[in-house]
Length: 435
Image (cartoon, rainbow, N blue to C red; front, side):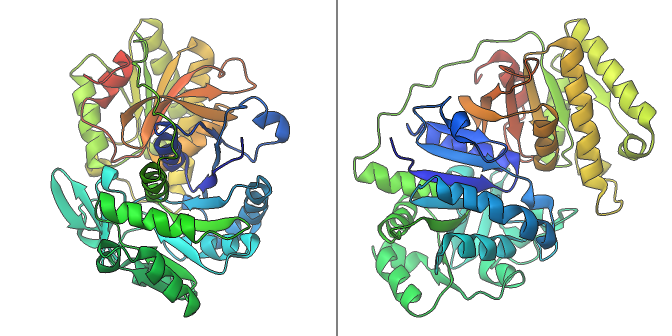
C-alpha cells in the first residue's frame, strides 16, 4: 500500500516519538537511521510510514547544508504526500545549533513547497501553542517556554523567547505567519491557511491547545496538500494533528492492542541527561534495586581509563544479575560547563560504553536517556531500523532493534528525552509493563 507520510527526526528520541504516534494509531511505521534502500523496505511490507532518525538538533547550519538535502531527496522519492521535518516539542534551537529555520529552508527547496505548515503543540505531551506562544507543563504547572525551569536555561540552546515566530525569525528570513486559536475554534483553519498562503506566507504556524484545534490543524494540512510531496515542520503534533483528522474522517484502521512486554531480570541504562526529571528517575532506581555507575564527565572526555572503569563496573553488575545505571549527571546540579563540543564527546563515549557492555554481556534490554546521547548510542549499536513494541512514556516507546550486527539485532531499547517518563520509569521498563 502507498505510504501516507515520511519524516526526518532531528534526533533519535524525537524520531521514536513520531513513530509511536503513528504506530499506536494503526499506521505501521518503521524508523531507519539512514535513508532506506528498496531492499530495506521489502523487510517491512505492511509499512505505511517511514522515518529517518537524524542528529541535526545538535549540528550547525553548515552541517545541515551538506547532510539534509540528500536525505530530503531520498524521502521525496518515496512518494508520500507529506514529508515532515520533526523537531522537539520544546522547539529548543538557535541560529548556530539545530537551526529549525535553516532546515525548513532546505526542505522547502528540495520538496518544491512554497508554504510550510508548522505544528509544534502536542497536548498529549502537555505542549501547547496559543497566539504563537509555546507552553509546556512540568510537575503539574504550565510555563511559557522562556520561563520553563529547564528549557529556559538549557546548556546549549536555551529558550529565551516564548513567541515561536520571533524565535524562528532569528534562524530564517522566510515570512512566518500564524493560524491562531480563534480561527481554529471557528472551524476556519483551512480557510485562514489558504488566505495567508495567497498573501505570501512561507511558514504558517498553527496554534494547538486541545483536541479540536489539533484536528482542525490536521484538516488544513491534509486538505491543502499539493499533488507532489508537501513539506511540513514541527513536533509530533504534526502526526497527532493528521491522525485526529483521519480519525474524524473514519479512514484509520483499528488501533492495535497494547500488550505488555516480557519482564527481564537485567536492564542496562545509559544516561547523559542533566534534566531534573532524569535525576529523580535515577534516584528512584537506586533505592529500588538498580546499581549506580556514576561517571565524572570531565574525566570521561579527557581520560580513557574512566571509560574503561565504567565498562568494567557495568559488566560486573550485569554478570551478577544486576541492572546498572551508567550516568554522567543525576540532575542539573551535576551540570559541567565546558566547550560547545563537550556534549557530543560525552555522547560518543557513553555510546562506546553501551556497545562494549552489550558485546560482553548480551543484555537484551537497554534504556538510553538524553536526546544527543541516544543518537550516538543508536550509531554505536549499528541500528538499521526500529519498530514499536509497547508504549511506556509519551514519545518514548520500547522498540525492537533491527541490525545487521547479530549482537544488536533483536535487542529491545527505550530511547527517552531527559524530561520524559514517570519517576519509576526504569522499573517499569525492566518489568515490561506500567505499574
